[in-house]
Image (tube, rainbow, N blue to C red; front, side, top):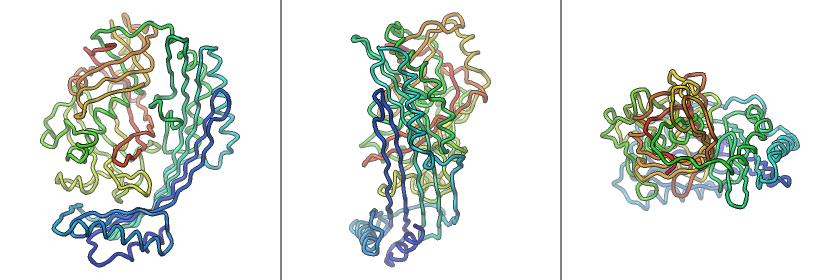
Length: 483
C-alpha cells in the first residue's frame, strides 16, 4: 500500500500544484441473530485508492480499485483531467503544509477478527433467548455485532507519509413488542434508526473486549420486559415541565444541536442545497450564547477508545481537541485544511472520508460535554414534577439546526423527587439556544461516558461516519414534552 501511494505521486505531471493519495483496505464483519436464528453473517473486504489533485487552482478527484500500472495511470489521468477541465484562475488555500511521517494504530486488547464466529453467534443467541423470556407479545428481536478495520496509507506532495490502522467493535439489541393495537421498541445500549439493519448499539475504537463489556446477554431480559411493559404504559403527558435526559439521550441532542452546525464546511455554505445551513455563522464566534453558563462542549479525536478517535485525519492532520462552546458561548468549528483556511485558521484535523472512493469531508469526531457537579440521582431528587427520558427513537430539526423535536423509546414520570410510572411515546421539542439555556444541572465526572455512533450521514454521494459523544445526564427547565 505504501509503495502504491508513492508510485501514484511519482506519476503526477508538472502542472499539479498539490496532490494527496489515500490507499485504504477496509474490512467489515457483521453477525446478526434473530428469534429464528442467524439473520445475516457477512464479511466484506475492499482495497482501493482515492487521488485528489489541484491544477490551475481547481480540484480534481478520482478513485479506483485497480492498483496495477494501467489502473494507476488511468486514475492520475482522470483526476488531473477533471481539474484541468475547470480551467485556470482558481485558488485553493490549504494553510500550512502537512509534512508528517508517522505510523499509528488504535488500541486493542482482543483482535475481533481472530474471535471464532461460533463465539459471536453463541453470544447473540444467548442475548436473543434472554430477550424472548418477556413473553408472546415480543414480536421481533435483533441482536448484532459489527467489526471494522481500516488500514490506511496517506501521502501528499508536501512530503507527508502516514500509515494508520483502526479497529472498531460494537454491538446491540433491539426488541419490538406488539399487541395488535400498539407497537413499542426498546434498544440497548442505545437506539439507532430502525431502517439500519445491524450496526446498532454502542461502538468503540477497540477490540472484542468492548463487546464483552456491553453485557448484551445480561441486559436482554430487562430490555424485552420494558418493551412489553410500554404497551400498557400511559402516554407521555402534553405539558411544559422539567426534562431530565440520560447521557445516552443527550448524545443525540448534542450530535444534532452542536456537532453538525459546528462543522466548518456547513458554516461556509457548502451544504445549503443538500442539508441546509447553520445558526453557528462565522460572525457569531465568541459572542453567540448557545446555552447556560454551566455548559461547555468540545470535539476531541484523541480520546482513547472513542469511536471518533484516530491518529491523523484523511488530510494528514494530527488528531486534536477543539473547544466548540465554553461557558455557554459558541467559540468555533471542526474543520479541514481548506475550510479552516477560508476562516483564517488552521485545520482542526476533522477531514474524513468514508473509504477510498470518497472525498474527505469535515466530519465531527467525538463531540463531548464537560461534566458538571451534580448527578442523575440528585437531579431527580431535586425535581418536584418532570419527565425522565432515555434512548433516542427519532428526531426532526430545521435546516438551520435551531427548532427541533426528539422522540425517545422510554420515559418515566418524576413526582416529588422520585421516579414514578413508566411512560410511552415520550417526545420533547425546543429551539437550540433556548433549550440549552434552560440547562441547570449536569452529571459529574463519574457519570461521563462516551457513546459510539456508527451511523452519522452527510454528503452527496452519502458518506457514513463513525463518531462518538461523551456525555452526562442533564436537567432542563420549562420544556414542552408530549405534544
